[in-house]
Picture 1 (spheres, one colour):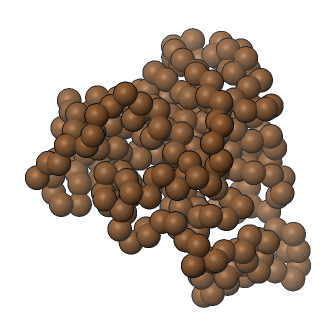
Picture 2 (picture 1 turned 120 degrees about the vertical axis):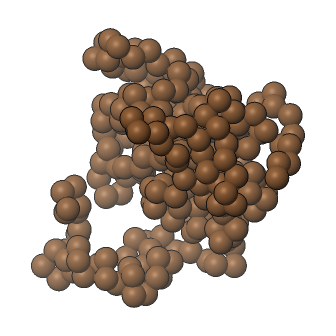
Length: 244
């Protein structure tokens, strides 16, 4: 269970000690004291108590047949109009590195959005690309949007080489250059979350939910990738239709 974990001073503060501290003192206090990532609750953008969740409905062979909202409303698989992923890459895997983030989001015929999956890790680019193909095999999306600012644009060419390792899969990688301030663009998710138009899978990566809860902080890679996917799905789409 501890594979991949890393602490600065294991003799004095073990991983177990730090996780107990995180639970007992709260995420915000722990991040401020131990992660050098202070969080001001008064600046919190997202009220995640308002976030709506959904679960997957599977048939006997394990295939997804519907998405079940908390209200009990079923969105049949045929009503899902699009599934895409967004990759916000990072350079390395050290403690001071940013997280790489890949988020998978679906949209239904009413315009509602569903965060299906999220992978966040401090990993090298090759592992990031491998994870993208793994997620594609799971969710069957054809398009992956890749943030292409600065060094990140080079990764698009690496994806072409990585594709050779997955001859049975075809992944279209589309570069996206971000121009708007990161905090402002992530903040545009707030009405979608508060109004229940962006829903989150029940078993979603807790690191993404934590980064949303604490936003704005220095670790916002998951929310940034989520915004990237949502922005691409909403391009050219009409308003959300209210359904009972």
